[in-house]
Image (cartoon, rainbow, N blue to C red; front, side, top):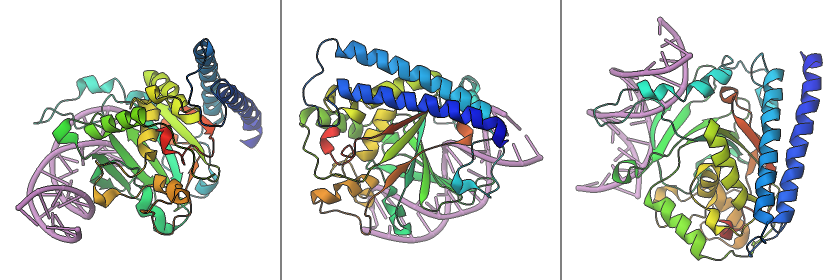
Amino acid sequence: MEGSSSDGRCALAAELAQVLQVVRQLEAHLGGGGVAVAAPAAGADERCRALVSSMRSSIDKSISIARSCCVEGRPMLPADAGTPESPPSADGSAGSDHGSDSRCRANATGQCKKRKTLPKWSTQVRVRSVQDVGSLDDGLSWRKYGQKDILGAKYPRSYFRCTHRHTQGCHASKQVQRADGDPLLFDIVYHGNHTCAQAAARSAASVAEPPQPPPQTAQEQIITVAAEGVGGVTQALEPMLRPFSFTSTAAGTDEGGVAGALHQSCVSTASPFMSPATTTSECQVYELGGGSESRPRNVPDIEFASKTNSSMGADMEFMLQLDPDFFDNPGYF
DNA sequence: TATATTTGACCGGA
DNA sequence: TCCGGTCAAATATA
C-alpha cells in the first residue's frame, strides 16, 4: 500500500503546505506573530476572508486525498503501529452522526440520549509525564458522567459534560481517551459549545481585558483540530483563526466552534466558574513562565499533537503551527 | 451535606 | 446483535 499512497501523501503534503502558507499570509495581514492590538486595516478583513476560503479549499482537497490514501482505514500513526485498531468506522460515522437525530427519541427529561447535532471537533493533547494526566483539565467545569471501554482501544474513554448542563442548559460535552500506543497522548473530542455563564464570562473577559504581553516563549506547540460537520467546518475554522494567530480580536471570541473550544481549553485557570477540583489544566502549563502560583506539579509543558482520527473520516483537519506565545498569553482569549 | 465520580444498565444507530 | 453514548443510582470526597 505504500507505493500507491506515496503519491497521495505527496499531494497531501503539498496541500497542507499550501494551507500553512496561507495561514502565514493571514498572520502577516493581521499583525504577524506578535500581539496585534489594533484592528485590521480596512480591506484586510476581505483579504482574510479570501484566504480563509482558500484554506478551506485546500483543506477539502487534503481531506479527499487523505481519504483516498486511507481506504484501508485510518492513517497509521507511529503510536498506533502494531496496535489492533477499531475497524475503519471511517466516514460513515462522521456523516451519519448528523441527520439521524431527527429520529432520536427524547427521554423523560426531553433530552435525546444519542448524539446531538452539535459541532464536533477534536484535538490531541500530549502530556510530558504520566503524572500530568490529571492536568488534562481544560479550564472549564466538566463533570464526568461516564466511562466506557472501547472496542480495540487499550484505554477506556471518559465522557464529560458541562457542569452547568442542568442549571444553565449548557450542552457542551467532551470525550477524553488515551491513545493506544502512547499513554501520554490523549484524544479529546468536543461536542457543542458552552452556553453557560462561564463561557459568557470568558467572552466578556476577553473583550474587557487587553491582551497581556506573553510571559515567555513557550515551546512550540502544534495543534491540529478536526472539526466535523458541514457547517461546523466553516463555523469552526473561521472563528478559530482569530484567536489563533492574531489577537486583536476580542470580538472574535464567541464561544463558537473550535475557537470556543480552544479558547475554553486554554483560558487560564483563574476563572471564577471553575471548581477547585478542576483547577489544573494544560493551559496552566503555559502559565508556568508567567509565575502562576497554581502551577501543576511536574508539568514542564504540554504538546498539542497532530490528530488523525479514524472515526472522523469526513472531518476537516486543520493544522496550524501556532505562535509559540499563543498559549502563553491570556490576552489571546 | 453538597458535589463529584464510578459503574452497571439502557437506548439507539449501524 | 454489537457497540458507543448516556443515564442514574450508589459511592466517594471535600
